[in-house]
Length: 330
Ligand SMILES: [Zn+2]
Picture 1: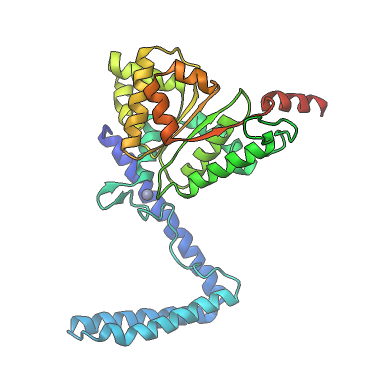
Picture 2 (picture 1 turned 90 degrees about the vertical axis):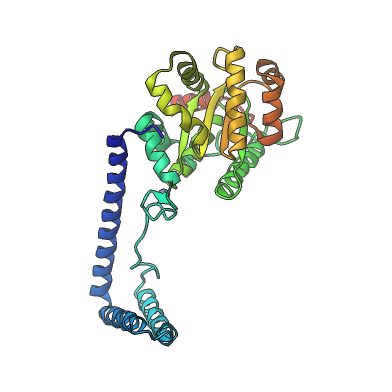
């Protein structure tokens, strides 16, 4: 990976800080619980002395030490959990909580970089701060069905704009819930202002909050990167290029707004195809109607998408205009 040593060290330092912060948080929890539940420290003292005793016996060659003490430790642990619950604490209150449970805040799983490490690399190389700001206001907690009409009907499905949106949100949630086990791909299409970009942001936020590596590009930015990589070999493009294929989720927003030519079409195919091979998820959104989409890009792009993506069509009146109108009324 093209990280400079100083960048690599900077990322490792963030892990050390996270570990310290989480340890500090745990210490505070222990302190609070000990103050509220006096018998807790006695239980913990007994557990740790049993553990020391067990280690000594094991060292002395007593193979059965494990079984003998296991039951006692188990009993004490149950008492501990019970005491916590009786005082209104969650049962895992005293445990160390990891920001990324997958790598336990080390950045690595079996010597491979964890997805959270990759997101840090992406953030470092490609300042996503503009997107991060947007994600604070465009996420599932801010999503509303208010702007989707019950009167507008999609003649092809018989569903209203509202029911269509509910169905698509359901697809988004399925996509997220199976994200770690079965990578999927979503294709949002429909007119301007029906919520395609908003939903992409919701998904991005959900995954970034769970330490997944997500890259968000407008189509224009993506093809600009590919052009810089291919024609001018610009340093920043060279550094960032591998992440486009390797991140957990790539979002290509507003496909069809870029200047389309054979280069763009070939790069789009390469990108989509490579990510399918690597089993990495991709989300594409476009304002282009389906028939125009296949004309704009090659048939092979169209066929990869229709056979590997969940097609999500949204309908409705332009939400941005609705918001402006309702703002004016208020
Ligand atoms: Zn991790």
